[in-house]
Image (cartoon, rainbow, N blue to C red; front, top):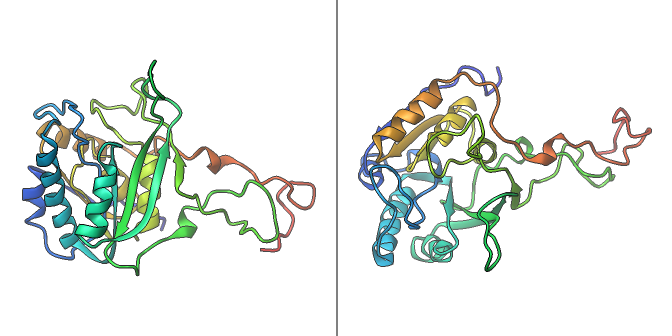
Length: 273
């Protein structure tokens, strides 16, 4: 049976992330996907993302401390963060809290905010850390087709690298919901496939529109999502109830065919891999 069949139910919890994480058991989580507010003044319905930076740092330290407590040995955490705070988050995770650094991922998108002074931003960053070095990493589940045939290449596909290209969920998209920072499902799919196994528990302490919970359950993982806004919890519940007919985004490289294949490039030749 494929991992997309019979998705398990997700648990959605309405409340403050730090308070609700405090009630979860030590070492009970295999993967955390955290997309906290970036402290840029966005309106999240029942709260506005604007604190003194010292307060924001204390908030970050609190939720991150609970995340470390919840991760099993070898469990992974992926953290989205805006450019103004990501370097501080890196130091907090590695030096202050003692997580093991695994990678700094750049999510590149082709459209975004326009500027007339300075360069327009076209990316966000994702920090990949783990609780120890013996981690789950399912490379074969996230490979992308090779661009060229070479004997030394693994023709099952290449490592996707640490620069990922996924389109935003645009406001005109059919998949768009009324949430200011909705993340593309294809991006979260790569995270979940790479760093967890079917049956594992995936936690999103800032679940928002429910993307992580939806992707995790479709892929056969258990999911817990927390959000302080009851409207977003209801939104996530609706998305979880929708029938699955494919994720809303994909890496554009996924559909390519390797060039210079032996036997005339029809892909039917026996390859030396």
